[in-house]
Length: 383
Image (cartoon, rainbow, N blue to C red; front, side):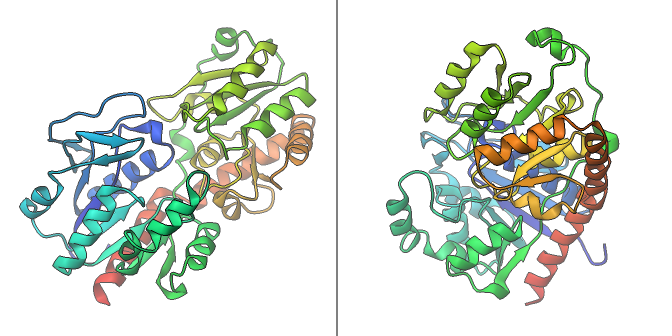
């Protein structure tokens, strides 16, 4: 890349290895480490949160991962993924002044505090809400009130607002951000050559008969993820086995899964410390039935593995697939069931989707996405 390396500071409510908080964790890790590999000086400030069950650490420490310095700030208080870090102001003042700040997440103490600090110090920053910009699911009225007051400056003071898809761009523009400040970057797909082969023990470990179709879901077990539609498909298609890999969001969605497990054809494996790349090639299809995803990294991983993908049109990643690369369906149980029946019943279609998914992965490489991110930083600094 032309030009000198930049000093980049990321600010995030959680960071690797907090994979319990979903797809943004491996995405932000990948992006930051690739930026470091491109010669940039990359640092992170974040909390010590790891998941929703463990008590966060109350001591500040710094670790280096992939050339990225990560400062995990003492987090004595937290509510779900929002950690309170009293030492944040001191940590920021001790750091060498960055050229640009990259604020990740929304409605938390770290992203709000760092955005305010950047405005005060006149350090340009980009804001990436990670799918959180539109108030939804819980306490919507309260979120709207806080967005109009306490959090108003986060987006308002950003030099650019980054989103991972056109779907998310529409949400951000509808929320009052000027169209010329919204930049669609997308996320990278893994390199197909990097996907490990299956271990060959998946069926035996779960007691799935040879030849029984496996439908894989990777993501949080949470409301809004379309879990109920996937379970409805399992009831309608008695030959399939549904395997769910992901943490319980602790708001009751797991109860539906546990009730369905009594059939012996629904298997919940819990959270995975790393993206479960070895599982994709052992599945017949990956299903992402969500009511709303800013992107949907599981579909990108499955596509790179050559696993046929079925996603709803409410997943941001849907717009990155061309015809023949994935099956995109409306958000409904009937549409999802019909799509799974079609894909599982047509071997030639599965082969075509496998090739198409890998073609999408090669087109949407992480190297390309990283170069686009660098262009955004340069544009911000130039303006």
